[in-house]
Length: 179
View 1: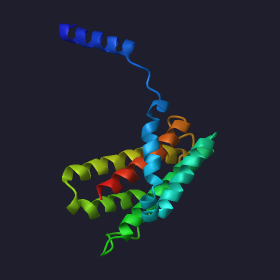
View 2: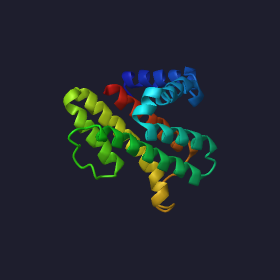
View 3: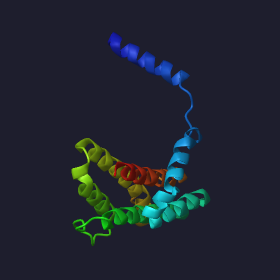
View 4: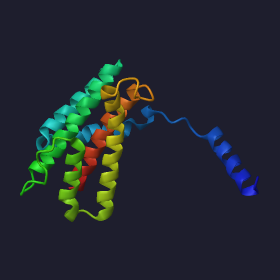
């Protein structure tokens, strides 16, 4: 084994031994910020259905004590994102391409494309990556909803629902703050 490899392994071992335990509770400030942003009167006025739906998804999350309830949280998060994207597309004159699509990923992509001339490429790439991450987490929940146990490789956890709800908030906040 090379000397450099040994020092990296020793460094990782030392880091793991001394690293603090990081818990979700330690990040309540981020969740509090997202919650406050989405409950602000300006946001609620601009996106009333998305704001109301996100608050419902948040409340549902804390009562989700079964797989079916976590799936319902995921469904609500999809509806929230669809309402948010629809509101953004409705503001556009002329209407954005493919306004009839009800698929949330299509609508999110359309929103980013509509605003692309006003954003730097790096901001668009960030928003696309954030949307892709949301979509990947949403697919985990949706896989359990539509795929059945034989197609799903891991069990659905409450944490999956929490991630989808928080990431739904984060995507909406970051897109809204970019406008």
